[in-house]
Length: 290
Image (cartoon, rainbow, N blue to C red; front, side, top):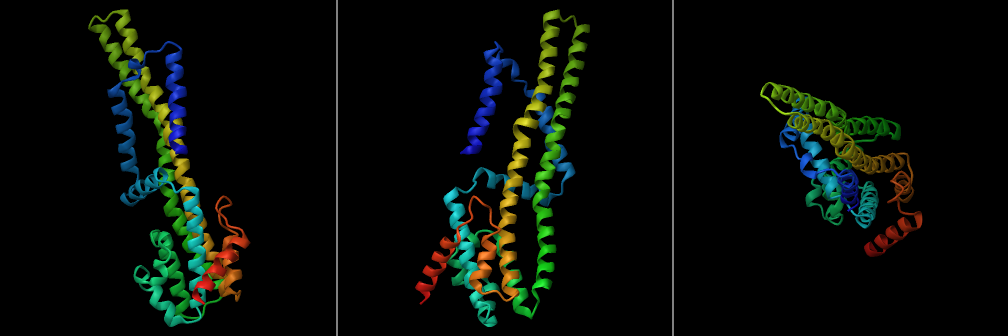
């Protein structure tokens, strides 16, 4: 909703201001200029990025459009923390833990936390590292080193779409200039065809719309979108960081509750539950199991 409101404000201020000054909206509609600029940008995007980056960019854009509501975010954090708590309690029984991490989709434990189950990268990170802990004794320092390198690789992959979109955003004014120059060339050629001064002025004005389109797409569309994607990645990395901190604290010998609280502390501030909330959730869970 917020993103839609932002788009409407941008459109209303730019185009509304133009019409308020006496501009004719029909003059802004230049489909050929739009084809040149958007087509060149799309081609450059495909040319400069491997297929998996484009697929990930599409997935992240869908997350921006269908961004979770605040209440859903808090429920997601609740499910993540309780799942980790239950897995840590099972960690003392490696055979029981194995049956859950080997096939999480079929595990009744994981099925109690559907929001986590629907997040494949996070789910893979959780089960891989619990499997690592179950394979043999590993110190907290060794575990931290392994997970830190994995998080760096994940962050690099997840942030590549945002960087690629930012580069295309920066290039949009250039594509606008390309379209404008081609329009000027066509306007100059019309002089040889006997165009009047009025017709020449109209063609030059139409050509300059290309510069406007390029700058508008740069600062009004693509740059905000690249920033939104970056925020989505930041939220995903916060969840992964939470899992990392929990496992390291547990491997260092902390009780399950203190390990979970360590992970809670690195969650994003807007969705981070208080310690009392966490204690209440775990108390309710322990009460149900009892």
